[in-house]
Picture 1 (spheres, rainbow, N blue to C red):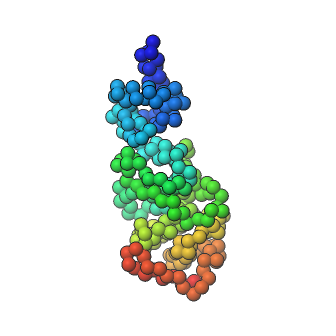
Picture 2 (picture 1 turned 90 degrees about the vertical axis):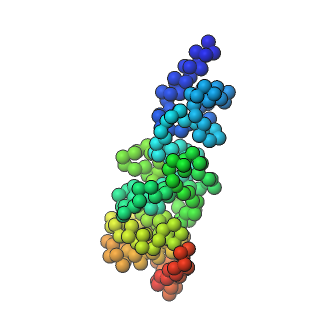
Picture 3 (picture 1 turned 135 degrees about the horizontal axis):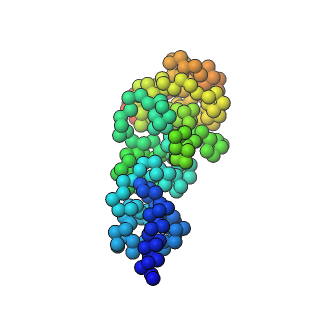
Length: 247
């Protein structure tokens, strides 16, 4: 009877956990699979261990979307942001196919090896926004994946990308990307710019929008007024280049 019960639980597990998705001990427990039973499934090669407390089905090809959803359940504020979000929302500009994913969140975590070995990525908690920005602002799944991982909307993603200029993105690279961001919603841009606490990101947003003659340039200057005080802002970038922005 015990063997039958194990096989019945295994069939339930295989039915309710989608192929291509990782599963953790908490999910297994909800399905009635104890730690001891999970160990039995591992020994019997019916489960594969990805990492501590994380499993997949043997010979399963993990899907990026399901792995990102898995991480989002475990990390507060987890989302796809910055340059990756812009590309995913249709603003790509000669982006290499295997460029690392730009992932953001509030928890100090290290992306698990089982994830980064399959999907090159980097993760940061260095948000350009003040804590007063309401939780979840500017984070939505992609229209074609309504139950997918949160992805920054263009207005938020743009400021996230600009905050990383000179750190993870070159000046020309970011400027070329921004050139294609022509349609932004004033009400959303207003919200994220008012809560932006990175002078570099705000000033780049204004200066490049004006230089590139983007339709929302005047709106950006008005909304970023608090960051435009003082005659000039400058900083030496990681590459050694000095970035200097007037008010």
